[in-house]
Length: 195
Ligand code: UDP
Image (cartoon, rainbow, N blue to C red):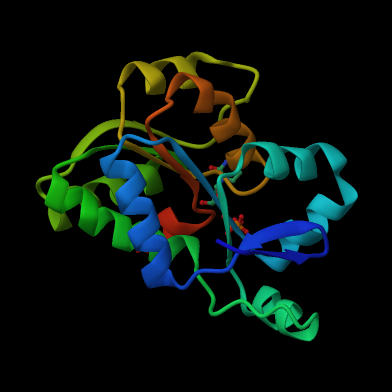
């Protein structure tokens, strides 16, 4: 699949439907998949932070355009991206797939009350999903106990709602220990889901 370079960040040129086929095929094959949904703020942050740019280049398996600004930027560069593919929309589509397949998921991030409400909403809407781990997002990344407990719960999918760059740094840290899992940062999505 083709990549589109927008100010140094390499986006995957796929529609939402194509991404869903790609991701569900990989999940079924237990192929680890780290997805970054990058908005213009993330692109600008990566330009100023070489370590974060390196993390995206080295660790992310797919980068989607999470913002109309990225889609417009790609069009201006004459390397169009087909559509906006947001973390929230992807998360909802993946939860539907997880429900069908009765997968195990972990929800890390947001305030404790929001995290709990989001987990309750998921369990109500998707009763066949097994929520194997939840934790709020207000911990220090240097404290590895959250990582260890999450890894021990062996989720098929991890949704991290810690805001960038924390969520991508957290997911990159757990990636080697969860080689078959789907990992994705979802920004403020738990706030939306819990509301
Ligand atoms: N958050 C968190 N831990 C932090 C900082 C933020 O869990 O140390 C959460 C915050 O509660 C919110 C989300 O991360 O739920 C960030 O949302 P925002 O919309 O700012 O993120 P973006 O989508 O812009 O990355």
